[in-house]
Length: 548
Figure 1 (cartoon, helix red, strand yellow):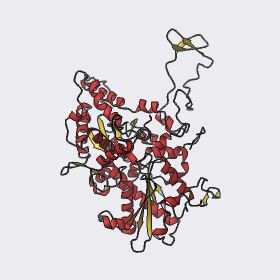
Figure 2 (cartoon, rainbow, N blue to C red; figure 1 turned 90 degrees about the vertical axis):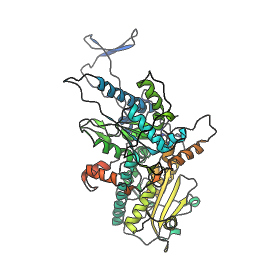
Figure 3 (cartoon, rainbow, N blue to C red; figure 1 turned 60 degrees about the vertical axis):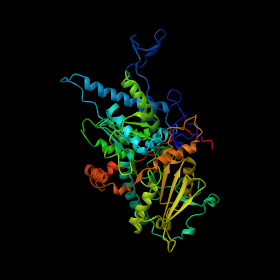
């Protein structure tokens, strides 16, 4: 079963194309000097030979190869061939690098010795920690300490970090971007009369029955099925942290790309930051442990490759499932003469200052809000304070409930939050969180039919996986022998994630000061380059047939 997210995999699409079967990527011909040559097969050795016109035979040793870059830049299939993915980014790649470090440490020094191998840095996602905590019935903090011991003492990592540390940077930067977009929008579309909260949106069940509105698209007045032109629009802003959603949008919904936040994901901000530390000539070998396979695709984007250093910001992404395998396979391959120690018996090591932990409660520190990083809540509260002077960060539950109207749709994966004035019931902001491909489709339909001057939402947190990141395709599955249902298992992982102590992103002053010391204030072009990226529509080259 594939580990890709639903929106990227699209189970109802005939989109899997193995490289050896039908990949449409053209193969470059490196040389034309042997035009007219023939190819023969030596059946005894199963070797192909190129025979020139002069009769000289040379074995053909090079074969066509397909990389993740090729898959990302091709619309021949929505997803990428998983064999390509695993071949280039897997826990085996991590073991190979660890072996190279050990070999260099024992090799005699010479004048012409190669440069030292890159030191290993590991960054953990809290969703992965929660998945391991659920499997082994341990607290997330205990899991983090055991993983830290394994990474430092078995793999030889010099640091073990927490992606949540860098998520705080992503959250604050995304909030600034949304505020900027809000001002850009109202500079183009002057504000209309306030809308009453009761009239701001139809009831969840009635929304689907609303008649289609007609909006002005590229060719004038068009139906909801036409492709609107959002190239000059600032709102709504769509979240950019989920690579499954980004890849799907680039390949099939290119018209929404101007609306997607340009702020990098926490994973890639971690990659940019860590690459800027240490010896610039010998950058760290950065491994990220993430809850979904789609993160491998994100790390492979050409935008995140440094031509000068010839390395990626994140060198290798492994999933929670791969890390769990690595606990055993690393011991078997790196220390074959020693008995394998189970994970629950691993010692515990102190946590890195960037893997934040509350010693009084022995809990990890996480962002308030959803288990997908808390984008919806943080951006709503930040914009409420910056645009309307409403401080919800320090407000009690009753005050928040008075200002924020919550609407749940037919399932828990589609939620709307509306910021209102409690006295006048005037609507200030409309936010939504949509998880899973079906809900993404519903939101895209709403965007197509909305009035550009009055967008249906100001911000949408979009995640490809139902239930969000705790249910990523790379998470540990429920034990097949267990009586626990998949839904109950996801709830258990979610509960483990929520045991953390919450802290708002802007309260993480260490991360903010670190980024500013490396790249300058957020208005500095260096900071812009470090914290933002871009998206490109992938032109269709073959038809993709969907069976809905």
